[in-house]
Length: 179
Image 1 (cartoon, one colour):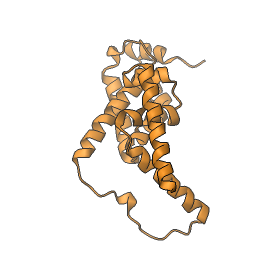
Image 2: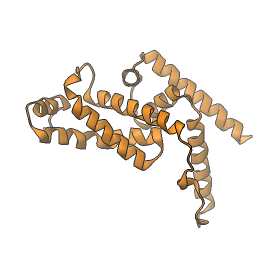
Image 3: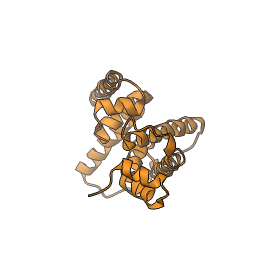
Protein backbone atom coordinates (compact mmCIF):
# COMPACT_ATOMS: atom_id res chain seq x y z
CA UNK A 1 0.00 0.00 0.00
CA UNK A 2 1.30 3.44 -0.91
CA UNK A 3 2.32 5.78 1.87
CA UNK A 4 0.12 8.82 2.48
CA UNK A 5 1.43 12.32 1.84
CA UNK A 6 1.64 12.87 5.60
CA UNK A 7 3.69 9.68 6.03
CA UNK A 8 6.02 10.80 3.26
CA UNK A 9 6.43 14.20 4.92
CA UNK A 10 7.25 12.49 8.21
CA UNK A 11 9.81 10.27 6.49
CA UNK A 12 11.34 13.31 4.78
CA UNK A 13 11.51 15.22 8.08
CA UNK A 14 13.33 12.20 9.54
CA UNK A 15 15.98 12.45 6.81
CA UNK A 16 14.64 10.23 4.01
CA UNK A 17 15.36 12.32 0.88
CA UNK A 18 13.54 9.85 -1.37
CA UNK A 19 10.25 10.58 0.42
CA UNK A 20 10.14 14.13 -0.96
CA UNK A 21 11.02 12.82 -4.43
CA UNK A 22 8.00 10.53 -4.15
CA UNK A 23 5.81 13.52 -3.23
CA UNK A 24 7.09 15.38 -6.28
CA UNK A 25 6.42 12.41 -8.55
CA UNK A 26 2.94 12.01 -7.07
CA UNK A 27 1.90 15.66 -7.54
CA UNK A 28 4.01 17.08 -10.36
CA UNK A 29 1.45 16.56 -13.13
CA UNK A 30 -1.42 18.28 -11.32
CA UNK A 31 0.78 21.17 -10.17
CA UNK A 32 2.08 21.62 -13.71
CA UNK A 33 -1.48 21.44 -15.10
CA UNK A 34 -2.65 24.17 -12.71
CA UNK A 35 0.31 26.38 -13.61
CA UNK A 36 -0.27 25.80 -17.33
CA UNK A 37 -3.97 26.65 -17.10
CA UNK A 38 -3.12 29.88 -15.30
CA UNK A 39 -0.09 30.93 -17.39
CA UNK A 40 -0.90 29.32 -20.78
CA UNK A 41 2.76 28.70 -21.52
CA UNK A 42 4.49 25.32 -21.19
CA UNK A 43 7.94 26.64 -20.30
CA UNK A 44 6.59 29.08 -17.70
CA UNK A 45 4.35 26.37 -16.24
CA UNK A 46 7.23 23.91 -15.92
CA UNK A 47 9.39 26.57 -14.28
CA UNK A 48 6.63 27.62 -11.91
CA UNK A 49 5.80 24.02 -10.96
CA UNK A 50 9.45 23.51 -10.07
CA UNK A 51 9.45 26.72 -8.00
CA UNK A 52 6.33 25.50 -6.19
CA UNK A 53 8.05 22.28 -5.17
CA UNK A 54 11.15 24.20 -4.09
CA UNK A 55 8.95 26.38 -1.86
CA UNK A 56 7.27 23.28 -0.42
CA UNK A 57 10.69 21.73 0.16
CA UNK A 58 12.03 24.84 1.89
CA UNK A 59 8.92 25.41 4.03
CA UNK A 60 7.70 21.85 4.69
CA UNK A 61 8.04 22.39 8.43
CA UNK A 62 5.54 25.27 8.33
CA UNK A 63 2.83 23.01 6.85
CA UNK A 64 0.28 22.80 9.68
CA UNK A 65 -1.63 19.81 8.23
CA UNK A 66 -4.95 21.61 8.54
CA UNK A 67 -5.59 20.62 4.92
CA UNK A 68 -4.24 17.98 2.59
CA UNK A 69 -0.67 18.29 1.33
CA UNK A 70 -2.07 18.63 -2.19
CA UNK A 71 -4.24 21.59 -1.14
CA UNK A 72 -1.25 23.27 0.52
CA UNK A 73 0.83 22.64 -2.61
CA UNK A 74 -1.94 24.14 -4.77
CA UNK A 75 -1.93 27.24 -2.55
CA UNK A 76 1.80 27.60 -3.11
CA UNK A 77 1.39 27.10 -6.87
CA UNK A 78 -1.51 29.54 -7.12
CA UNK A 79 0.48 32.19 -5.24
CA UNK A 80 3.42 31.61 -7.60
CA UNK A 81 1.02 31.99 -10.56
CA UNK A 82 -0.34 35.25 -9.18
CA UNK A 83 3.21 36.59 -8.83
CA UNK A 84 4.14 35.46 -12.33
CA UNK A 85 1.03 37.02 -13.86
CA UNK A 86 1.68 40.27 -12.03
CA UNK A 87 5.29 40.28 -13.25
CA UNK A 88 4.19 39.36 -16.77
CA UNK A 89 1.75 42.29 -16.85
CA UNK A 90 4.71 44.63 -16.39
CA UNK A 91 6.44 43.27 -19.49
CA UNK A 92 5.52 44.02 -23.08
CA UNK A 93 6.35 41.24 -25.51
CA UNK A 94 5.12 39.57 -28.64
CA UNK A 95 3.88 35.99 -28.26
CA UNK A 96 5.81 33.93 -30.81
CA UNK A 97 3.28 31.09 -30.60
CA UNK A 98 0.63 33.32 -32.19
CA UNK A 99 2.71 34.14 -35.26
CA UNK A 100 1.53 32.35 -38.39
CA UNK A 101 4.43 30.29 -39.74
CA UNK A 102 2.68 28.33 -42.49
CA UNK A 103 -0.82 27.54 -43.67
CA UNK A 104 -1.74 24.21 -42.09
CA UNK A 105 -3.61 21.53 -44.04
CA UNK A 106 -6.42 21.23 -41.48
CA UNK A 107 -9.94 20.10 -42.16
CA UNK A 108 -12.88 22.44 -41.61
CA UNK A 109 -13.87 20.66 -38.37
CA UNK A 110 -10.37 21.05 -36.91
CA UNK A 111 -10.31 24.73 -37.81
CA UNK A 112 -13.74 25.31 -36.26
CA UNK A 113 -12.70 23.45 -33.10
CA UNK A 114 -9.47 25.46 -32.91
CA UNK A 115 -11.34 28.74 -33.34
CA UNK A 116 -13.80 27.85 -30.59
CA UNK A 117 -10.92 26.85 -28.31
CA UNK A 118 -9.18 30.16 -29.07
CA UNK A 119 -12.35 32.14 -28.35
CA UNK A 120 -12.81 30.29 -25.07
CA UNK A 121 -9.18 30.90 -24.11
CA UNK A 122 -9.51 34.60 -24.94
CA UNK A 123 -12.73 34.82 -22.93
CA UNK A 124 -11.11 33.09 -19.95
CA UNK A 125 -8.19 35.55 -20.09
CA UNK A 126 -10.65 38.46 -19.72
CA UNK A 127 -11.99 37.13 -16.40
CA UNK A 128 -10.93 38.82 -13.16
CA UNK A 129 -8.14 36.86 -11.46
CA UNK A 130 -10.24 35.35 -8.65
CA UNK A 131 -12.95 34.21 -11.06
CA UNK A 132 -10.37 32.69 -13.38
CA UNK A 133 -8.70 30.86 -10.48
CA UNK A 134 -12.02 29.41 -9.28
CA UNK A 135 -12.95 28.34 -12.81
CA UNK A 136 -9.60 26.66 -13.47
CA UNK A 137 -9.62 24.82 -10.14
CA UNK A 138 -13.21 23.62 -10.64
CA UNK A 139 -13.28 22.81 -14.36
CA UNK A 140 -9.74 21.69 -15.11
CA UNK A 141 -8.83 20.19 -11.72
CA UNK A 142 -12.26 19.05 -10.50
CA UNK A 143 -11.89 20.45 -6.99
CA UNK A 144 -14.86 20.73 -4.66
CA UNK A 145 -15.85 24.28 -3.74
CA UNK A 146 -14.76 23.73 -0.13
CA UNK A 147 -11.25 22.84 -1.31
CA UNK A 148 -11.21 25.73 -3.79
CA UNK A 149 -12.02 28.03 -0.87
CA UNK A 150 -9.06 26.67 1.08
CA UNK A 151 -6.71 26.96 -1.91
CA UNK A 152 -7.85 30.51 -2.68
CA UNK A 153 -7.95 31.51 1.01
CA UNK A 154 -11.64 32.42 0.96
CA UNK A 155 -14.93 30.91 2.06
CA UNK A 156 -16.66 28.13 0.17
CA UNK A 157 -19.46 30.56 -0.68
CA UNK A 158 -17.01 33.06 -2.14
CA UNK A 159 -15.41 30.28 -4.21
CA UNK A 160 -18.86 29.30 -5.54
CA UNK A 161 -19.72 32.93 -6.30
CA UNK A 162 -16.44 33.47 -8.17
CA UNK A 163 -17.01 30.30 -10.20
CA UNK A 164 -20.61 31.15 -11.07
CA UNK A 165 -19.75 34.75 -12.00
CA UNK A 166 -16.99 33.37 -14.27
CA UNK A 167 -19.38 30.95 -15.98
CA UNK A 168 -22.00 33.67 -16.46
CA UNK A 169 -19.44 36.07 -17.90
CA UNK A 170 -18.05 33.39 -20.26
CA UNK A 171 -21.57 32.53 -21.42
CA UNK A 172 -22.31 36.20 -22.16
CA UNK A 173 -19.01 36.77 -23.96
CA UNK A 174 -19.30 33.62 -26.06
CA UNK A 175 -22.97 34.19 -26.91
CA UNK A 176 -22.21 37.78 -27.95
CA UNK A 177 -19.58 36.38 -30.33
CA UNK A 178 -22.17 34.09 -31.94
CA UNK A 179 -24.30 37.00 -33.16
